[in-house]
Amino acid sequence: MNQRLNQLRKLMEQAKMDGVLVTGLTAIRYYSGFTSDEAALVITDKTAALITDFRYTIQAWEQSPDFQVVEWGKVSLLAQADKLFAADGCKRVGFENESMTVATFEKLKSFSYEWVPFSEELSKPRLIKTAEEIACLQRAQNMADEGFKTLLTRIGSGMTEKEVAAELDYIHAKIGSECPSFDTIVGSGPNGAMCHAVPGERRLQKGDLVVLDFGCVYNGYHSDMTRTFAVGEVDDFSKRIYDIVRTAQQKALDALKAGITGKELDAIARDYIASKGYGECFGHSLGHGFGLLIHESPFASTKSQWTLEPGMTITVEPGIYIEGKLGVRIEDCCVVTEEGYIDLVGSTKELLSVD
Ligand code: ZN
Ligand code: ZN
Image 1 (tube, rainbow, N blue to C red):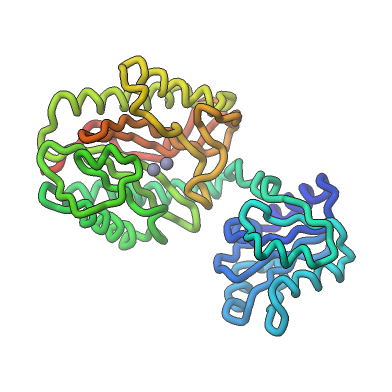
Image 2: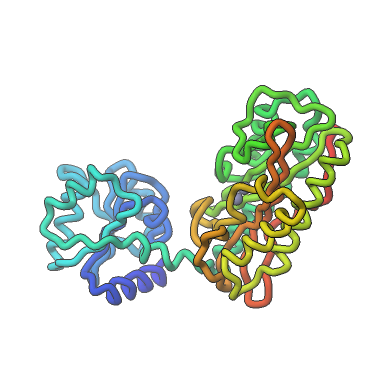
C-alpha cells in the first residue's frame, strides 16, 4: 500500500494540492486496503489517516497498517476530516467528484478549502494492473471457468433461467468466490436477445441457445466472461450466428495488443459482423476494463479514445441479438501485453450443448 500512497502523493504534487479526501469505496480499498464502508481517507504531505467508526476500528488496524486510524465518534466523519486537513494547514484539497452525492458536496462547501475535482487522477494508477493484481484476476477467472464446467453437468431442459443462475452462483460461492461479479445473466431462447437479460421463469427448451454472462471475485478483483451454449440440438441458423460471433471475437483478439485504440479494436469485430449482414444486431460496445470494479477504464467502443497499454485489462465481447429469436455473445477477459494479450479465460469456445 505504501507504494500506492507514494504514487498518490506524486499526483497531488503535480496538481499542486495540499490534500485529498478519498470517500469512494473502490479508491479507499485501492489506497488503504480497507474494505468496509463508512470511512474516508485523509491524505496530506504529513498525514495518511483512515477515518472510520467504532464498528470497524479493529478491521482498519489489521487491513491498513500504513494508516493512522481515526475514530469519528462525537463529530461527523467530514468534521473529523476537516480537523485533519486544518491541522496540516491545507488550502487546496482534492475530492471524488464522480462518486460524491450532491448532499455531501454541499457539506464540504461549508469548509474553508478550495475543493478540486480529483476522481480522474485518483483512478489513474488503477489503469495498469500489477503482477499481483493480475494474479488476483486470474484466480477469480479460474473459479468462473471451473464453475461453468460444473454447471453444464447439472443443468438441462426444463430448468428455469433463475434456477440456472442460482446453481451457478452457489457453485461459485462454494469454491471461494467472494460474491458474483454482478448479477448473473441468463438469457434463454428469445430472451437471449436482451443483452442484459434478468433470469426469469422461462424454462430451457431443446433447440435454445442460452447466453450466460457471469464472473467471480477474488480479493476484490472481478472477472467477466460470457459463453453461449445450446440445449440439445440447435438449428443451422443458430449455428451460423454463433460462428459469426465467434469469428468476430477471434478477429478482435488477433489484433489485441498494446498500441491499438479501443475504437480500432471495436471496429474489427463490428465491421465483420456488419459484413455478414448483422451490423444492426450488435448494439453495445466491444469491451471494457475490469478490476476492483466490474466496469472500469479503458473502454473499447465506437467512440473510445483510449490507446491500450501493457497491463491494462479489456474484455472482448461481441454479440448478435435478434429480437424474438435468439442472442449470442462470447466474452473473454484479457490483459494487454506488448506483443498481444493474456486471455484469462480457459473455457472452450466450441458450441457446447446440454441435454
Ligand atoms: Zn460479461
Ligand atoms: Zn463484460
